[in-house]
Length: 181
Image 1 (cartoon, rainbow, N blue to C red):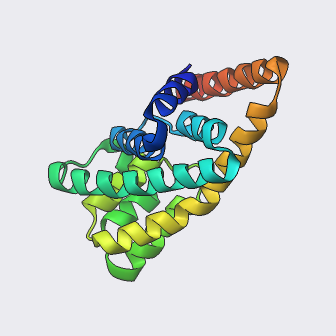
Image 2 (cartoon, helix red, strand yellow):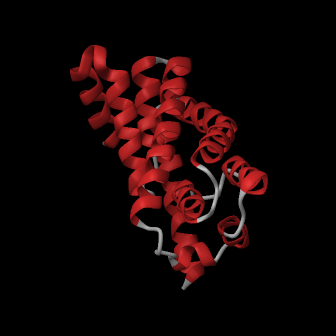
C-alpha cells in the first residue's frame, strides 16, 4: 500500500523523482519511529536496484542530518525514557569528539538500533554536526545494503512468498508485543 503510494508520486514527479524520494526519506527520518523500508522498496521498484539503493542512501543520510539539526534545536532539554533504556544511547549522550563519532558509527552499523533514537541521542549529546553526519552516513552503508537486498528479493517473490513473510512479520511483532506485557 505505502510502496504503491510512493511509486505513484515518483511517477508523477518525473525528472524530480529523486528529489521527491529524498524529501520522503527526510520526512520519515524526522518522524523518527516510522520505518523507511517502504520507501526503499519503492525506490528499488522505480529506479532499479543500484540507483534505488543509492537514492535511499542519500535520502536516509540527508534525513538523519536534517533530523539531527531539528532535534538539537527543538529538543535540547528533552530526554525521553527510550534513550534511558539502552546503555549505548545513554553513553552517547555523555560523550563528545572521536568517542561520540565511534558510538554513532557503531550504533548505525548495528542493524537493530532504532535510527530515530540514534539521531535523537546524538542530538542531545555534544557531538558536532560534521562528526554526526560522517559517522551516521558511513554507518548507514551496510545496514541499507542489507535492507535493499532483502527488499529486492521480497519484490521478486510471488504472492505466496509475500503472504508467508507478512504472516511471519505479524507473528514476530505479536511475540514482541506479548513478551513486553
